[in-house]
Each structure stands twice: as structure tokens, then as C-alpha cells.
Length: 313
Length: 313
Image (tube, rainbow over all chains, first blue to last red; front, top):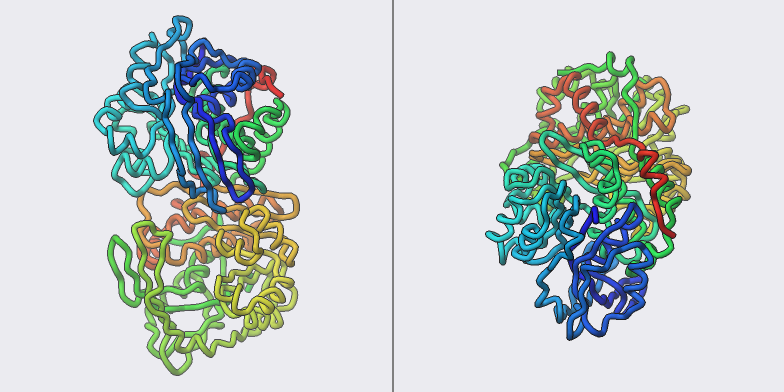
């Protein structure tokens, strides 16, 4: 297995201004793995309860997601209930039932231990390091986290970050982690904690990529209909790392393409509830939206006469 | 005169988390004209009071700004007092004294009436149309507005928009004007009101450009120090229209370069209080930051093997 994700597989109940759904497929590992599956095989390390519907497992399998690392335990599946405002950036958690996820101790099947790419979903940083202890020599370790771990388990998180290549965070998280309000300074501070790259996810405003001396500022594809932002960040990371695991190189230019592909996958995911849009997504749609993103972002050098005509100073 | 701006010339008192300044040069026409002056001549139509310091006029003249349209009237100059939070997107107006600006009735000197580019700063839409009645055949009319006019003088604003080529607004304004929360839909609605292009300014998140079938999503240059955001939008518009007035063509590709130049000029303006950073700004700094913005925004096509390896649907 070249790419492995460790995270949650959940049943989500969602309310948005556009509708509601009860107990639909959710969880970071679900979004990540399905997004990554467009590029190649991906193994999932997660836990579900006895009540988890077989049809969701069948769907993941049908996408080429390897489920050897997905264990079923006595008890109920992790449930999350959330509500979004008309400004979909504003989310309210109405209920969290960890259930079997409370005792999650990720164990990698032997065939996963030689993986080249690992994504540590948003779980306890102790468990994230437990995963790293089980892999041999990954080329690239990606990591997500959240406000809770940044405050409640800061020391543990910092130990994890020393072993991580790339951190995926949002604006608020990178500020909280670094204590810097300015995002550029905040990313610089995080780079000094261990990761050699930081991706700051900004939802509808795109993403920023920081690595030694390198900055890539990516706009999100402007969408006329955003329906359900749940899982957008994990879909982004899945597209990012799925692409890298399939790409011939993982240099900075490839990281840029990975960020745009992550944004493209996320832009589809938010168009419908749960993973529904990813179920029908075709390679051609991905290709077309990537080309559109490129067309929408690029601009030319200035004309020589404008350059030479500049005055001031 | 090829480019003319109509707007305010003011004395601003500013508080930011990084310091404060009393009665410094401000106003939409000041920021616009100085930003535009890097590209070529620009005429200002505005009003100041008897108390307006000559040194500010000398500075504008030294930048090549034409002041034939700047009149001095009995009374005090327009004053604005504002405070910014650590999140500089959050601004509080502490005091507004319109003074001579309350009776502003823009009158264009004869030499301005053949101008090719006009920017209608954020003033009463009745006055904006009064300006348009005085110009002969401008190639491009740009227009700014604000929440107050959108609600208090909506009908008048809509009549102005019918005569405008390009509207410059922020996220909140385009939503308010259109009644659409989604920015893409909102911009589409505004395009049906008259303008053939809409620029949505998003501060640190860059800008979006919409014209018939065309979308350009520009990231702002990520800055490690933002000091005073006052005038950023007017500086953006000044860079945009200053460039266009100097460029050989005003096609969509040029609009893209104009947006990036607007962002570049604004990115400098916010580095110091008032127009201070623009006083020392050099052509070489503009060229360098434009090249940096281009380097930070561009990405390549996907590799053929990734494109052909995509699976799904």
C-alpha cells in the first residue's frame, strides 16, 4: 500500500440552510480515502461499530479503498451532529458521540507498514505518533490537527510535529498553534516546530503553501453553489496526498499541483451532502475543473512599455 | 488628462494595534491618485478646506498628480477617525466630520472632459452621475460604492450602475447589492445591473474578477506585516486603472494584470500608516513584487501519466 490514512469513519447528521441529512457517511478517513482513490490505491486505518452499514463499506471498496485496516468493534459507530449557518464557515457542533472511536488504537496491517505516504487525520497526537512507530520509512507524512489538541495536548502535538513533513491546518489553527496573528509569520513559526511544509486551508479563499523560502498562494475555484462543507479539509488532503502518491516527483512544483487538485476535489465534495458528489465524480470532471482553475489563476508578465514607463520613488 | 478620479481628500486619525496617527493624509482620491501616478498622469476632482496643509498638495503634485480639479472651499477639510482591531478586517468608525465635503459638487476642469478613464470614488450616486454628465466619451468608467448608498440611495445607485463599466466592491457590498449570499451568484446579479465587469475585493484573500463568462481569481501577496489597511481598496483601484490607462490594450488579459498590480500597490500601502509607504515606493519594488505574485500564483498542467491514471465515476 503506497498511501495510508488514519482517522475517523463516522455517521454524520447535518443541518445546512439548504436541507438536512441523518446518519450519512462521514469521518476524516472516509473523505480522505475517497478523494485519494481517484489517483490510486489507499488503505484506511479506522474503527466502526457493529451498527455501521455494510453499504458504506461496499462503497469504499468499490472506490478501490483498501479496508484491511478498518476494524469493527462491539458498540456503536462514532457519530457527529452539526449545523451550518448561511455563512457556511460558521459551524456548530450539536452533538458528538465518540462511541467505539473513544478506544481507537490504530493498528496497521503488515501490508501497510511499508507505505510511502501517510496521512495522520485529526486524532489524539499520542495516537498519531503510535502510527508513525508502525511505519518503516515513509517518504512523506501529512498531519491534521484541531484547536482541541493544540490546547489540551500541546506538548504531545509538538512531539508529533517533529516527525511530520507536512501540516494541514486552517487560519485559526495556525494562529493558535504559533501564537502569531499574521498567517505568514504563523506559518514560519510552525516550520520551526518540525514540518518542512505547512498548508493553510482557507475554505472558499483557497490555500497557502509554505516551505523553506517557497510560497504558493492558491485561490479556490469560485463556486456558485456550496451545499455542505463537511469534510472539505479531509477531501483536500486526500486529493493532495493521493496525487502525490501517483505523481512521478514530489518537488515544490508537484506540491502546487497537489494543492490545486486538493482544492478541486474539495470543490466537488461541498456541492452535495456527505460524500454524495464524490460518488458520481468522473476523471473528466476533475481534469476539466483543474484546467479551469489554471485558467482562472494565471496572468502574464507586464508589457515592456508599462515596465519601462513606471515612475516614482 | 487620460485618467481622472473623483472622490475625497481627507485628514484621517487612525488607531491600529500597532500605533496611532492624528490628521494624516487620507481620502479615496488621495490613495487612488498616488497609486495611479506610478503609471502616468492622473487628475483629481475633490474638495478641501482652508485648513488643508499645503505640504499634502505639494506631495501630490510631486507625484505628477494634476490638481486643477481640486478646489479649496471656506471651512474645514473632511475628517475621518477610525480604529482597527488586531484582525484588521474589523474597523470601527469613531468619528466622521464631512465639513466642506458635505457640499461637494464635483466640477471637471475643461481639460478633464476628454479623459479616457474615470474612477467614481465612493460618493453619493447622484454626484457620480453628475460627473458622467461632464465627460465626453470615456473608454472605461470604474465605480466604487458602500453599504450606506446601497441601502439609502439604492434607486440612484442602480441608475449610476447602468452607466458604469466596472464596479469595485467588497464581499459584503456585492452581497448586499445583489441580495445573493454566494459571491459568484452575487457578481452575476450585478453584471445584469449594467456593469460589464465586477471586481470583488477580498483584502488579504485577494480579488475576484467577473466579466461575461470570464473569472479571474487572484490571491493577494501574503504579507508578514500589515500595519494600516486604510485606503487599501482605493489604492487597489488606483493601481488597476492607472495600469489600464498606460497599457496598450484593455482586454481581459490586461484586466488580470491590472488586478494583480492593484493588489501589489495595495500590499505596499498597508505596510505603513497613511500614504507613507507609497511615498518611498520605487518602480523596481513594484516590478519585483509583481514578479513574486506571479511566481506565487502559477502552477503547471498535470503530468500525462496522472491524467491517464485517474479513476472513478
